[in-house]
Image 1 (cartoon, one colour):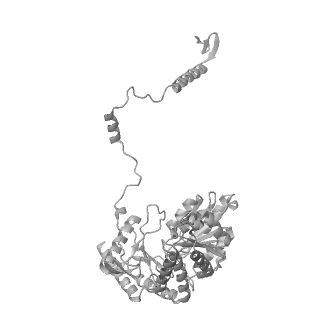
Image 2 (spheres, rainbow, N blue to C red; image 1 turned 60 degrees about the vertical axis):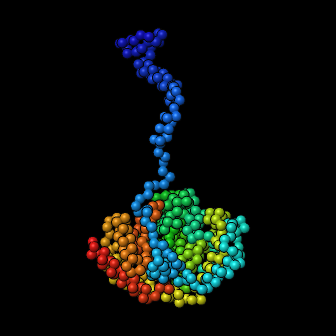
Image 3 (cartoon, helix red, strand yellow; image 1 turned 90 degrees about the vertical axis):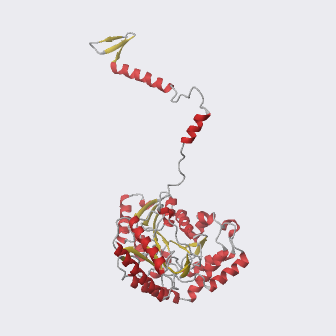
Length: 465
């Protein structure tokens, strides 16, 4: 090979080659050489047992769980009696505001009698899912009773309240669907949304203007939006704020933008409306305008389990696609029997709802006079939600103050309340607060003493700050 300097060319075997081709050729040879070499050369000798042991000692496996913080080590007080309005906590008689026993039916004589008869007839459990010989006649009776009470064609019974929400939502919402949900929905709904793999868009908590603008932006920005299934997911009474959803406005937006509505009535079933039929009765909205309604039975009805109600097609679809229905053992028969009895008691005693509303009004009036607190919940919500009027600027800081207040109420005044301490996987970012569940079985004296206790504890907290 010779180099022709004037023309800056290389001549190989008498053939002129441009300079850049020569460089590229050399680079290609180098690349091929490197690719032919082994990336890892094993050691020339095997490791000794000592070296193996040293490597094993140095190895640290990846933790299966996140590190435990001091916040996670908190042990809540332990109930030592039935979770009735008057209970025993850590050996102490207290006024209980932590259980959602809204109608005071927990421990009711007729409920206990119904459970006893069912236990004697059916035993404790069902030992099988509904589709695999786990269906008992009392399950069908309970589903029919719920549907008749609400005025829907059919209903389906789940064995656990939370599994109702995170089974129903993925049964209908699939990948590619659009779901618009309130940012304040509780964890069971959040989990159902996650499992659905749908496109999830949140709107500001209970803000209808935000919902409207969200629906409009989805329609305008996405040409495919009208061709996919679209849902609005809300709670009747929000677990994380005690606010009541304006269902009449939601239905108007649903019909205008052609969405389906999934409504969770866990905290409103048996409570809202003149006869306890929930948010549809409270807002005077025909129940058939709501596509899918879910609720837990462990609140006003003082039993356990959950249900979904709606059209026959909505219910039948879940019997094959609702994971909590298909794969879980069915609801213990005595709990289904208790739910039927509780609905009957609600129909026979409409004064329970009136008594509950009076208790809510008394407590709200007293708590509104407590300095440093603000009542967030709506006036007819049995879930009275208190937040600090002056925040520390962080949820963790607020929660620490609220827990100190709750501890002081329990130790000094025998008032048992709970803070909204959320799981690390709960994505709700609403303000922390104290959640108070009002019951029709609370006495006026219970409520007045509670308000006075809050005033004293809050005064001492403010003085300490």
